[in-house]
Length: 310
Image (cartoon, rainbow, N blue to C red; front, side, top):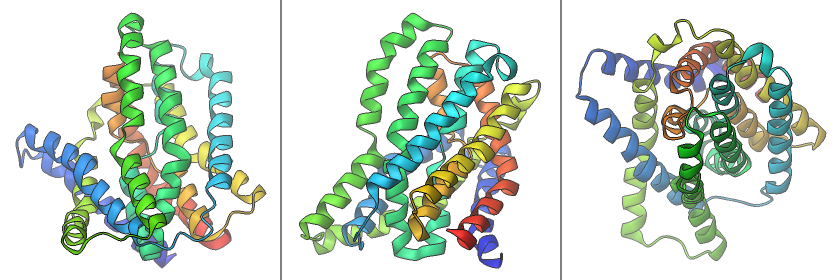
């Protein structure tokens, strides 16, 4: 249990610090927008390329991981659709529920698995990205396009959004790091040092940006859809993924990373996604904030379960 607390406490502290700094107007709004972009497009990719290029990737269970994550995600989608008229009768709220019920925040996942497993954790994190990110982003786009208030405009935005998924800097960094690893060429000395220095800043700055993006004032009056999103993202999805991991006999570090990815709250970037596709951005913001708070309780449970039984 102490190991679980050690892994999660710094994550929670940095997220709360980011929220408090923005609330106190410590820096102008443009700073937080720039920080989020810097972390997403530069710092985290540098960390992934540098770490994966020299990581031990023997017997990485990509096929089983994709199957376990995909089965859990699709089962969650079916269940959300079955109860949509009860928990999210408005189309916009249902689109927000699907997105926030599936998409996980990368920074807490990375922070936790690296704290627990050091360099091996980076490989496990990359595996979780491969297993979850393409499928959950694609389903989120489809849900938002079909339920957005401006369906024509949203449909026109589908092409750029799909390009954004395919050109996702995180996935590109994973692919590049894996390619260098397989080719066994290594990264030249100066470039390796630069990537390492930039990568060190990814986690603390990324978690600060997550906290700064939280909008707790949006939770007022958001209703059953927000509660449903918490139930799906923080309880149902990780439970379904855990069943898949058990059936496929995936254990250890890789299983822990996959379960944590399923159990973390929705990414703050989901708000921008919803706005771009004319979805219910206000409800999305409420879901992100509520999930982040409640995950302080639920995430330690799943992490304990993973470390004890996987």
